[in-house]
Amino acid sequence: MTAAIVLAAGHAGRMGSNKLVLSLGSRTVVGRVVMTALAACDKVIVVIGLHDQETRSAVEQAGQAAGAEARVEVVEASAYDPGMFISVKAGLRRVTGAKVVLIFPGDIPLIMPETAIAVRDTVLEDRADIVVPSFEGRRGHPIAVGARHIPELLSMSEHATLRQFMTGHAATTTTVPVGDDGMLLDIDTPEEYDRVLKRLKSVETSAKEV
Figure 1 (cartoon, one colour):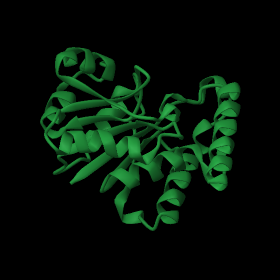
Figure 2 (tube, rainbow, N blue to C red):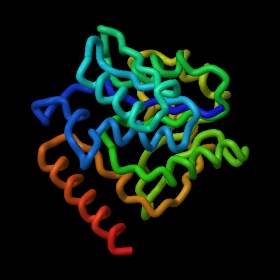
Figure 3 (cartoon, one colour):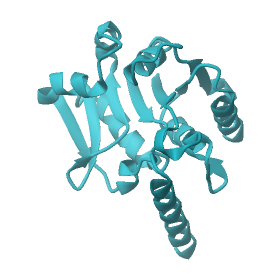
Figure 4 (tube, rainbow, N blue to C red):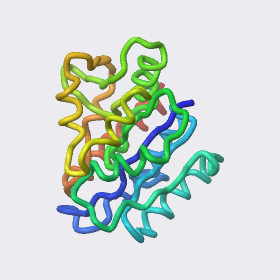
């Protein structure tokens, strides 16, 4: 069994609104992430903010559109939120029996399914326990983690970070080259949202021309 955790409990910050429910073509930002996660994993756990009905609705709509409602679970993060890692732990607590877990940020909507599948398969084929995709030497997302590391992640402080975990396992982390610069494009500002919109339009135009 394979599982994905989508981190969708972040604040709007510089966007001034809930960036996760912004439209991208026929879907929302977080909806696109959920669809990619579903393409690579049996179970998708989306961690949202406390009482965030807007994001919950967007996630549920994505599951319905994919005909995969039973494979998508929404978990509310704690009211006390010292950082992203508490969301990672909230998602991991809902993971049972998975050989590999993929961790997706909720605000990087153009990750290709092939990228998620590549890091997933590297763990499933026992070639590595921690895998990160890279594009022209730059690391991106999602991170794939083998099941044996779940207890360690759950035992870490809620004030910890994924970066600390990765640094502690740098010697055994494998990078997988992919042709996917979309995995580097997050959305934190209106300008970055516009950049992602333009990239999506460019990709869709190219697909129609093929």
